[in-house]
Amino acid sequence: MKKRNKIVCIMTLSLLSLCCIKPIQAQEIELKPDSSVQEKGSIHVELEETKDRLSREGVELSLVRVADIQDGSYVLDEPYRSADVDMNDIKTAQGLQEAADTLRPLVKSPLQAKRTDAQGIVDFTDLKVGVYLLYVSDQAGYETIQPTLISVPMWDETAKQMNYHIEVFPKHAPLPALHVRKVDYYDHKSILKEAEFTLYSDAECTEAIKTEKTDPKDGIASFDGLLYQTVYIKETKAPAGYQLSDEVVKVTIDDAWVKGDDDLRTIVYADRPLATSGGPDTGDHTSVAGWIFLLGVSTCTAFFLLRRKHEAQ
Image (cartoon, rainbow, N blue to C red; front, side, top):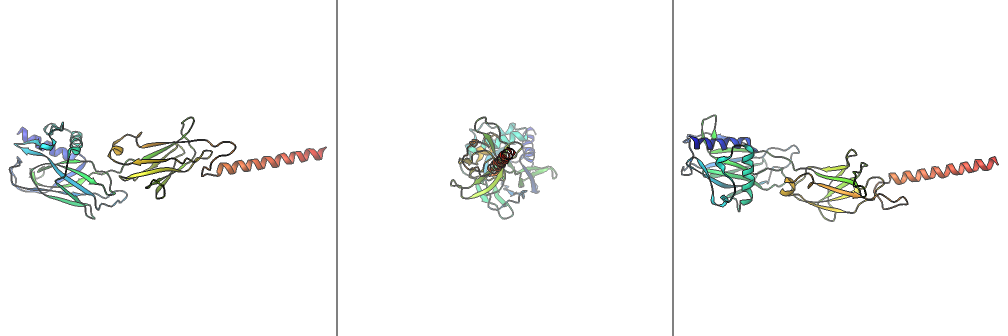
């Protein structure tokens, strides 16, 4: 009974982890699953529609078995025994996710790899009893999906029996935003005047992806809706009174970048103030025009005063 409870426990944790998993077909199966049972299982995966209605087609999902079920206990398959993972001791959804993250780098090649159709659906069939790791091998423009452990069979609480046919709706999330913070070259304080940055797909900065302006409250421009790719950031409009930077920053958006902290995902751009006698173009002529106007007014005023003084004499 204790061993059976372990099996039911990890199946329940799967329901609480990063995807919604449920059985879709009930069968009369003995309560304690074992790999010696000839019953084969299946996993039906369906990607949900995103807020931005990203394409769900062509996402490559891979599946690999990482553990067997023997006498009511989980036993890691040979390629994964070097991992510091005891699947029989997992008690929380967080522990289950940590186990999936630990096992993922050890995968050499998947058991099956398939691409989703236009509805974001893919089916993995002919699966032996065991625990499987589901992960994304090609995001193809969809949002992020963390690796997930799925047990075949799973416990069907409604039918009170094991079920070998599982339906999975992976939870998904957009990639974190890329932040660009504008600071003064000398005091490194945020510049609260509006600047503009453009995201490019090429190092020559000819293929623009999108442009964002800095927030005057914090001097930060944010780029969201990103994909796994290499992009290039360049300032395309400097704040009033500052030189336009020609620096191009390369950013590789990968797993390390996504899982990193905000410091990793924040670019600090330092701008030099314009010299009072002139300087490079900022891309913003508001300040220059203002100074010309003030100079003109001052000149006219001085001329008028001199003329009045001359007439008075």
